[in-house]
Image 1 (tube, rainbow, N blue to C red):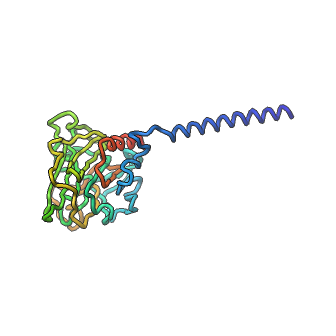
Image 2: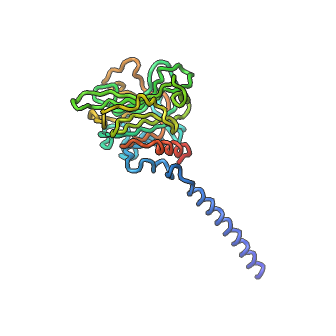
Image 3: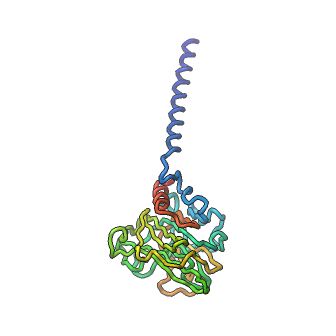
Length: 287
């Protein structure tokens, strides 16, 4: 009896040590050090996040629960974080989402994987304007400026805001590769974290790649343009121009996207440099 009792105690001791060991490992995993003061990408921007497409096997916008009203040549595969949407000259368009109808300040953030093609630009995301090819806001790569295989990226933001007289005011911001340094980013056919921000308080318009500001400072300040003022109704469109939708007539260079997108987020504020760096690092780490 004494031998059996000691054996039971020994077994219990081993079991307890193993349980304690596993518990400690789990706690360590759950307590990863913050990046930029944030534990996960979902914390960046906090209550200013107004739309998020994670593309985890569907096209749902998770804050509103909206699914695409139309989806063309879209499938899902491995992404920068989890799954991503793969577009083969395709797009996804949505009915109006109330939180996106008015963005005086904004940040659009997305992971994109694409090729230079030497023929047409690529529109990753736009908020459409009625009857127009360019939306109120547009996140673009000028893939038509570089031949296939050329590794330099030209990343661009375009806004078309309604001025006091009700007219369209066009503003853009991008990197200038001829200046070298951070303005000549590389990354064709690789996952790139691409961000554009508009600060309505000073009309600063900036572009970032992989956590670093790459836009030309000469083109970032937009004088007295002020907060964005959208033309409505406006619809979120992923991977195409407004002119690619049924009933419109696109020009030859206005083509739907071929490539992949992941973790598309829209904020109603201009994220800071530190927040954008943290968002890039957290999503890169799968957090």
